Image 1: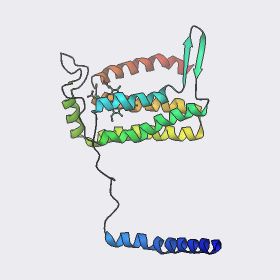
Image 2 (image 1 turned 30 degrees about the vertical axis):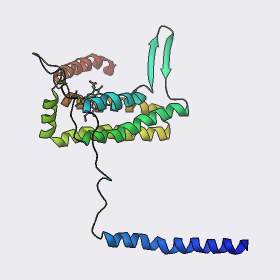
Image 3 (image 1 turned 90 degrees about the horizontal axis):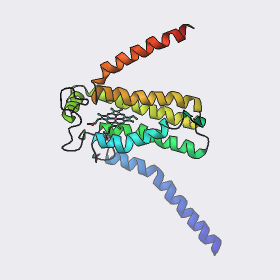
Image 4 (image 1 turned 135 degrees about the horizontal axis):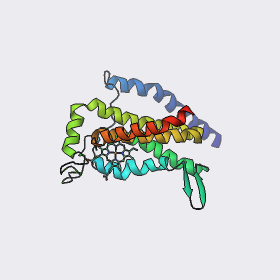
Length: 215
Ligand code: HEC
């Protein structure tokens, strides 16, 4: 009796599997013959402003990458930080995934700052652009805004790859790349007044390091 039931059950399973498999895609295709896959699986609605997204997500998650390798000189000597355990690498992976995926949240139209927050944008030499000024810049050239987003995402992808290979040496370069991805966007949209200042600083640093190179 038992063998019969099992065989029957098996046969039914097989019948279902065999009859359903080819039928499913065919009927789905018939229902929506020309419909392409949706661009998104649903609507996306922002919760916070860009400023808050930076403060509460991008910035803290980037620290998992920035802080993963460093050399500190303290009164007790030199302290070398680098990922050693699986848990250390997991933290870096959290940072990398948040950069790679979270960057695209900057494509959802959202306020740049919370209502009433004008940034540090008043006075004779304002340090920051106002949210309205940032928006105007973005709307004038959305391709540039998207390029900055892709740059951040690319560093995320790079770090995900580094985590797979557990390559500590490359983590140093990735930290530099991440810093650049953040700063080039900030210099464009948040505090463009600093661009000139930084260029000058950069020229000074280059002239300082020249004698080193010729040695
Ligand atoms: C695509 C552009 C873009 C990228 C890339 C970007 N940011 Fe920002 N970020 C902004 C803008 C714009 C603001 C200013 C928003 C405002 O104050 O209106 C900002 C503001 C901030 C703030 C200030 C938040 C506050 O509370 O005042 C922090 C911190 C910050 N970003 C960190 C980062 C870090 C760290 C990265 C890189 C890992 C990064 N951002 C990458 C555009 C960007």
